[in-house]
Amino acid sequence: MTWVPYRTVDGVTNYQTTVRPDAVLIQHEGKLIECRKVLIAVKNQKLSSAGDFNCILHPDMLLNGRTIVSAS
Image 1 (tube, rainbow, N blue to C red):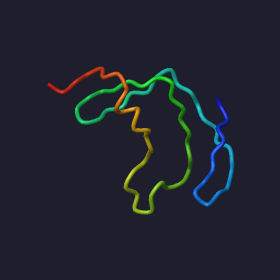
Image 2 (cartoon, rainbow, N blue to C red):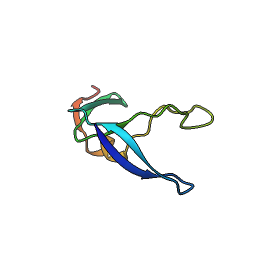
Image 3 (tube, one colour):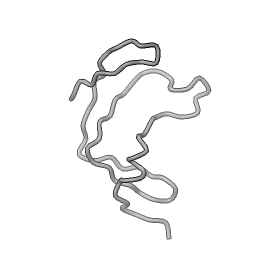
Image 4 (cartoon, helix red, strand yellow):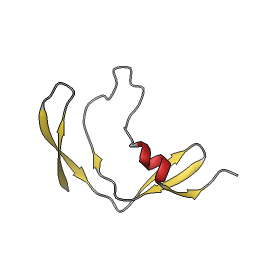
């Protein structure tokens, strides 16, 4: 577990507990992508008022992750 400092849009500074798994697998557009050196923070709140998404991924995870399985 790791404590990560962050600042909200309204300027409030706080700390978030995170976990550092060995790897994360992401299924995206018919590919299975493996990412290492990842921190995961879990929050018990909605990320959008419309409920459009459940998580936020850094773009580098999709761009620079190692593709394990490609669509044929």
